Image (cartoon, rainbow, N blue to C red; front, side):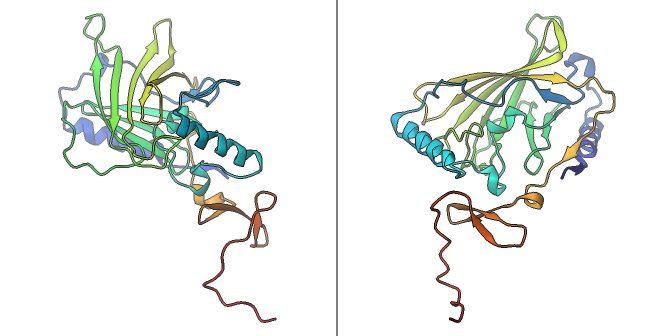
Amino acid sequence: MHVPGSIGAFAVAALLMACAGAQAHDQSKYPDLSGQWHRDGRPRWVAEGQKPPLTPEYMKIFEDNLEDMGHGGQGDMTSWYCLPQGMPMMMNIYDPMELVVTPATTYLLISHVNDSYRRIYTDGRAWPEDPEPNFVGYSIGKWIDEDGDGRYDALEVETRHLRGPRVYDSTGIPMHKDNKTVIKERFYLDKSDPEVLFIDITVFDNALTKPWSMKKKARRDPSPQPVWRSEVCAADNSLARIGKEAYFMSADGYLMPTRKGQKPPDARYFESPPK
């Protein structure tokens, strides 16, 4: 069940704190990215009948994953046991997205699987020497004035220092286990319709045979007071992960198999019930 969350309050607080130390900030130079943005299109990285540009090794992993899912398993998906989706999967925008622009940082907030959020640093910093990898990575961006009119038209972003496991979408398309992924993005409004936001994403990953690009599209909610919701994955998750297996938790509190022929978990460290 979804309940009202505080993601909007977090965004406002972040905006106020950042703006307090940036008196020279001119908001009119930036594109209007305010409001609530909804995905426009399917949250997939391949169309029906197409295949991802994976190396033979990772194509085999993907095909095994699809076979497992076809028999009722969870495959290589990670969000079923409440790990964050991370990059680039979170940019499928499964739930509404908010962008909060400040001089030094642009915050990207999505209430999905434990409230995903990103910080995109636009203050000219260099890459950290000893970063701590995380599921959304470390993002450095740069605002671009394409036509020289003194207003920014696009935000270009590069993301590194990611940790895994991560996939592209709910079909479980895998990323390389070395986690050396680099993701480049370009955020910009449709010139003919400012209520439409495009996000061009290109992934560089050693599981790919070539860089993989995708254009994502989002549309602004016309409501002046859209409803923001928060999702806590563990609160309503009926799946339990034991080892690498997924089991279903029944209403009476017992583990159930999720696919035909699934073995029960190993109970070697528990006392056997009396016969």
